[in-house]
Amino acid sequence: MNKRICKLSGSLLTFRRSVGEWCKGLNVTRANRQLGIPFQKDTPVDKERFGQWNLSPATGRLRIVLTGLLVSILVVIGVGCALESQPKATEKIKLSFRHVWIQEHNAQMLKIVSEVIKQFELDHPNVRIDFEGLDQTVHREQRLKSEMVTGNIPDIFVLFSGAEIEPYARAGRLMDLTDFLKENRMDNGFYDLSLWRFGSGVYGLPIEGFAEPVYYNKQLFAELGLSVPTNWEQLVQVINKLKSAGLVPFSLGNQERWPGAMHYHYFLQRFAGSAPIDQIVKGKGSFINADYEQATQRFIEFAKLNPFPTLSETRSIAYAEKLFLEGKAGMFLNGSWELNLFQGEQSTPGFADKVGVFNFPVLSGTKEASVGLASGYTFGLGLSANLEGEHRKAALDLIKAIYAPDVQRRIVYESFRLPAMKIAVDYGRTGPVFKQIIDLLETSPSAFVPYDNALPPALQEPFFQVAEQLIAGNVSAQEALQRLEIQLQQYYELVGQ
Image 1 (cartoon, rainbow, N blue to C red):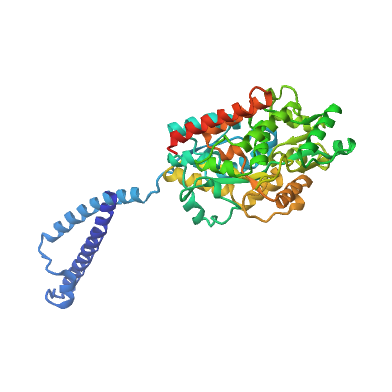
Image 2: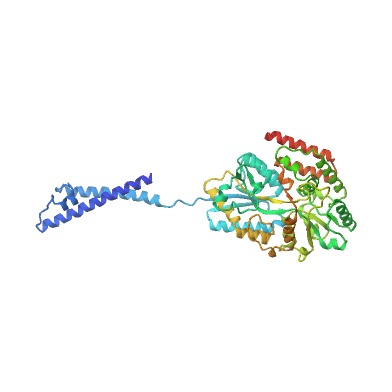
């Protein structure tokens, strides 16, 4: 409406100029009369100036009326145009951002992202970020799954890729970031986005790479005359010698269950290679096969060696970290995200020099990819598809800030996370253990996606539970695989495969 009024004002202003010209001419005429110069109405100049205006005695009154009316109209229009020209009040935007960086080994990661958010809020005073931390298992296995069902999910949140994003993307819960990547020339900026794709879309971005090696205490190994095990027989010898010395062979806190499953997936991979899990992910596979049965039976034998601390099922990850850091455990199977505990600001001085890494031993005759290192780019951030307008823009601007090269380098140098983006990294600044993992990745003949990332969300919790029961000795190999198979077939039926 205001736009129409302002357009009308342009015409009225033209009209006002015409009246002004007429009034100016009228004054000239009066002056001429006072000087005795007759008014020549029919001259070209007078015609152009006055047209057919009637210069009768009523002209003065008409001029006064028209001028008053014009002024009133222009005052009203002026107010309307002023209101139209005023900028709209900046919209207040609040975004929710859920992370899982609540444990000690994530302290630097939390610090970096928190500082990015703080600066973002300073640069965008109308935007507030509700930055909430939650236990990873609670977020991943409980809260996010239920939120995906209801559609009431955080605006930005930690997300695991692979099979986990498929049902979320299929349901339309995740924002497709394909255009965002192209607009910001980031579509070729990551090492690997394959596990973040579904159909033609990209439904999240990795914030770090990772590997899952076995950390070992080089000093303890040297004192006991131990070598890095490369096969099953050597692994058994190392476990027995560490136990004889009063040490825990493998530090483990399995309260959240996924650390124990990390051991189990290495056994499955070593016996069966990648083919069975690949077929399961594609909707054509099965847990019932000879290789998986042999692997599971060998895992039961492994558990009977008591390689873990007592009551490991009740122990936290922090407990396992502390056990290894204090030199009470010889080995610790976990991810590269643990690096800052060994060589970060809060680490024990000199401890990093005692830490070595190796790939999990070969446990049977090798098959394709059976000697691979569990690694990938499956941990990152996703955005809600519910975001629209200025909220969507603000969320994407924040993502752009987090994935800026300088921030990504901070993640490498300060939090000791493997880079997910193709950025220049000086590995001389990353510490001795970091470089060992990089070398291990480069020399490993193959890699595989951890099973908790490869399996669909509906299978993750059953997989964790089965691994826990196998460690406790409460289930046979056949029973364990049958339980997984039942869950798998139910999932296939649910999704129509």
